[in-house]
Image (cartoon, rainbow, N blue to C red; front, side, top):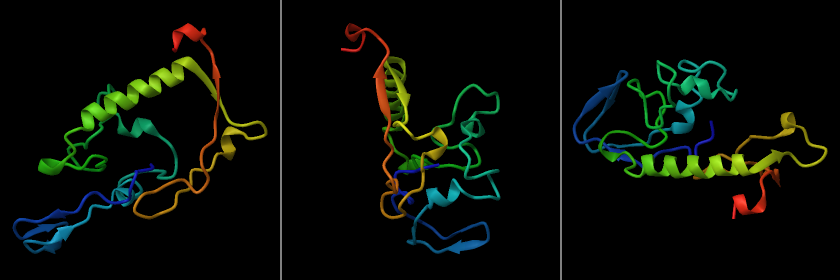
Length: 147
């Protein structure tokens, strides 16, 4: 729902091609709008709702991090120009998140409910939140468990 930036690194067509009735001449720079792909109402239902299950594979076993066979989402690009570090990056981020979730209980600041959290973004080269997310972390393990 919230890509780091709205566009992938520009790609250049090596030969003339047609995609969805759009003619693209050779040597044309193409910008892929990942922000638009993630909010395409022709592809996704309830585009403004957080529904991670929509990205499960057909057997429900895992979330597709690169793209499916239909290219509905491209967080790390695709083809010859896709990010070679995506599997490592995803693994490291998941390990860091798992440790944070395991070691701490997370709550919004006093007086703020979960429903009050604002996820609006500033649209630009990068897409930071309009209002930064603030959360209170309470250690839930003995100190020696997370040092």
